[in-house]
Image (tube, rainbow, N blue to C red; front, side, top):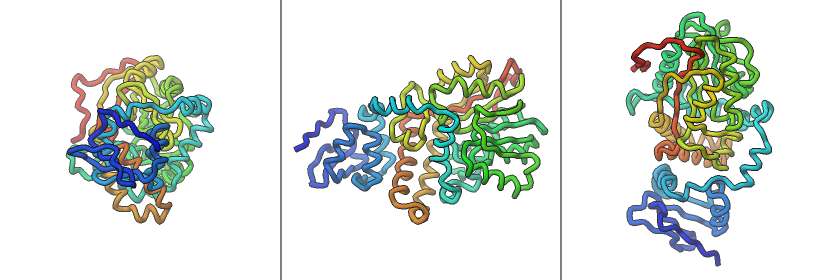
Length: 380
């Protein structure tokens, strides 16, 4: 019989086997986990993050109670401190983020079809952390506030050349062209996003001022007055941070500004195998790593916000929308796919709620451009 040793600092959750055997108990449990197969315990011992995710997706683990609260309890315990196995780290080292692999990785997550993302994103189709003036601010408005906050930090002017690195479905670049009168170029590694964003520009009569190209950050051509990169640096990989900032510095005119919004962490840790399955080749950089590589490339760090609470709220809205559209997701994809994404959104929300991940929004300049003495960039 498989024996299980539960640490004394186990999180406040109840874990039970389908046979009725109680593995842990808690007086004020925030959640109850039912493990339907002892085999799952072996998978959890070998690779906690990926083992749990696979078992959950396959229905071999069920959670009663608040899913996010349960995951938060686990994340705050020592059970979540174990990194990915050595074999996983070696596999990632042996599969470097070349341009071809970066495109493959991007397509694995983003080329699932706009029909899927339309089911749970807001009408802007923005797939990055929003900024909420109030907790009850509608998600669409919060995404618009985020875009205006970025534009204010960039001090965008009419007819300036603007580059959006990792443009997603195009909303920020379209917003810049339409509201601020700049000439926008959005680049992405996702063919599906490039097609969709181009169609949006044509539908809004912005095709002459807003273009979208299938292009890696290492293939940027031209020089721009202002640059933004939102939710893209996470995909670059730790070994490529220096090259990423060098590419930005080369594309930014002297005195130009750049805003980067990125999921980060306080201390350098490799991503779990579950996170790598969602975002292949990714890494969440620390503030120190960002500062080091940006400075080495000739960029000056001028202003920074930590918007972690805002991303937790964004994820809460996405998860709520996803749950409301669950039947449609299963009809479009399948049940296992829906459970995978349900868990991904819940784990992401828990990571920000438990302060395991951060959301940095950082303003850089190329050279010593003078900024206002007081820097209240907020539009709300």
